[in-house]
Amino acid sequence: MMYADVLVVEDDPDLADVMLLALREAGYPVRCAGNGREALDAAAKQLPGLVLLDVLMPVMDGWQCARELRARYGRTLPIVVVTAAEHIRSRGHELGADDVLPKPFDIDEFLRTVARYYGAPHPAPSVAAP
Amino acid sequence: MEAVWSALAEQRGKVMSERRFALGIAAAFAIAGVAWVLLTDVLLYSLTSDRALAARFETAKGWLFVLFSSVVIYLLAHRSAARLVRARAAMMAVVDSIADGVLLLGRDRHVAYANPAAARMLNCDSAAELIGMSAPVFSRRFRISYPNGALVPPERFASQRVFDEGGPLKYKALVHPPHGRELVVSVVAAGVRILAGTTAEMVVSVMHDITESENLEHLREQFFAAAAHALKTPVAVIKANAQLMLRSPRPEHADDAMPAIVRQCNRIDRMVQNMLVLSRARSRTLRLHFDEVELAPLVAQVAREMAFDERRNDVHAEVGASPRVLADRERLALVLRNVIEDAQRGSAAGTPVTVRVTQQGDDAEITVGYQALPVEDGSSAADDEYDKLGIGRSVAETIVEAHGGALRAERSGLDATAHICLPISMEASP
Image (cartoon, chains in turn yellow, green):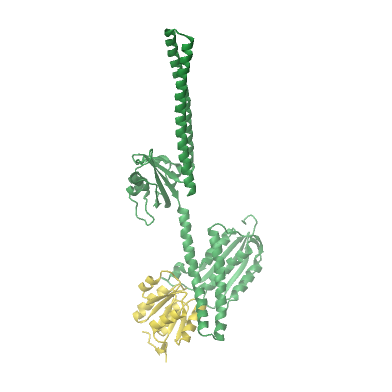
């Protein structure tokens, strides 16, 4: 059985690893993508329950990825931008992100944000991609 | 501040001593005149009792006194006038030679004098172009604006307000000379008053060009913003791993986390080195220590270091030649690390980065080739924003240029190559 998971989109492998580890330990099903293009491909295969999206990435950046995700899946897919960029909250909301989590983050705050948009860390039934 | 007070006190002292000097001359003249009249009268009447002869002598000594007085007044006036001419010439030489633009406005509030620096700053052929210019004409021609871009109304110019409000007044403004570059100037205007408390007879307006310092400040802000941004990701990795280990201290977690923490510490170390180099280069205090460096062993060593990070793409060194260059070994190694790290970050997963050393005439060339990741249209990665935030590229360019060399990037489809050219000959070395 497939479950909607948390899709971590981050080009730094060490940061992606620690985010995945924290989510797994909290009981979330997770996947990882290294850039915006990989994230769109991953979402097309199986729609995630939440996307944690870095901004500055090679191939396709987080802004373009957020626009594409919104165009394809509407507002039903929660997107949280996780970024080191300054003054990005307003732009994040403009482009349809539900929230912005600044780097470096506290693990507790990170997990609280995930819980706010994904729900309790129990596997949920997957939603088929259109 | 103390220096200003002492200068004012000194000036006041000079005014007092000049007044005493004038009073002294007047007193000496009065005493000499009275003494002349009394003594010559006593002498005259002791020598003769002939009233007609005495009257002629009285007239003669009166003429003599007038002649003597005229000579003394002439000498004093000539001395004062010469002193005024010398002071004026010295003041004009000072005003004409200073780098700040100076405008003198007359009672009609038009420009009565401009020094050569003012003409240069305002992109005029000569200072004469500015003479007679009124505030509205000055405003139209040079578009004086506040730093936020709003035009300064002519009546709000510091030089105009000083006439009405007193001063001195100071403000920062942007000046847009026709066919010239925009300038940031600090303007100070002060009134020239004959008597304290009266309306200004003239106004002196001094324009200090602060464009370069403002640009440096802007660059510094950009630099710190980029540095802060670049440091956030490694700090995020270290912080998150440390917090996870504190939450659930399991040995297997430490085994995974420690290499990541070490990698990110190394990254921070490299960033700090880069920041120091860039900061010193921008403040023109970067010092290089040149020595003869054989390129092949250096390239092989850095390639081995960079290939050691198993999370990144492999690095192959192909060293066919080993030219020697005059270089700062440590800084050149930093250039190689930065260029190779850029290539590793920007290359497709599983593809190697290849570093080659060749000799092209009088130049040594190090090339770093890799298969670049595609960049999709509309992504900010396409307009180089992704690279701009990495200060490693700027540092590499700065160091290579300080060696008299050049760093350029070349791309054909997905094949990307960075070329580092360094002069071999001594003459081309700094």
